[in-house]
Each structure stands twice: as C-alpha cells, then as structure tokens.
Length: 102
Image (cartoon, rainbow, N blue to C red; front, side):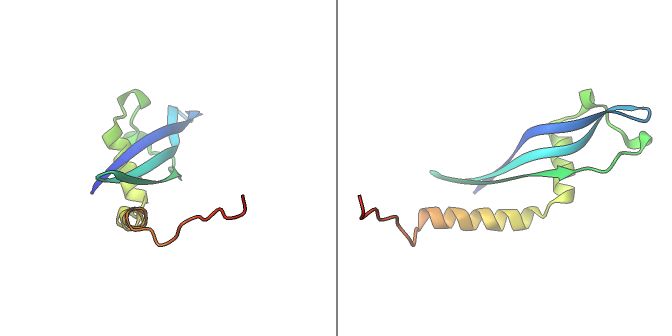
C-alpha cells in the first residue's frame, strides 16, 4: 500500500500584523494506491495564526513543512484505515448496478 499527500491549494492572509502571506488554510488530498486500485479522501484544514518567532515565510515553505502541519492536525491512521476499506471494496465488490429498465 502506498499513501501520498497532494497539496491542492494554500490560502493565505495578505497581511496579519507585521507578517505577510500568512497561510491559514490548507486544501489537501490523501491518496492510497494498491496495485491497480486507488482511492482518495480530501478536505481542508484551518491553521492558527503563527507567532512571529515561529513564522515561516511563504517563499521558504516546503511540501514537507506543509505535510507536517497536516499530520499534526489530522488522524492519519484513521484516514489510512478508511482508504484501506475503500480499496478492499473496490477490489472485492459486494454489489453491482443493474439497469433492467432500459
């Protein structure tokens, strides 16, 4: 099983006191792939305003930093369990669609 974060967008306040371009929302996708099957979950996370001494300017942000913010806010283990269940349902379906009325 392979899990992967995709950061789809970052929203920022243009000015927050002395700080500029302060990230306040992360829009994300978390993907799971198992061979030929894939599933994903998506959402957004709001961030608290940073302290001036811990602020990271937007031009210095890396994907790893943003992912660490997400992983501090989200229950990644529960998300992985849900994605695993989705992949199992795709690989081992229990229902089909029947279109008998056409």
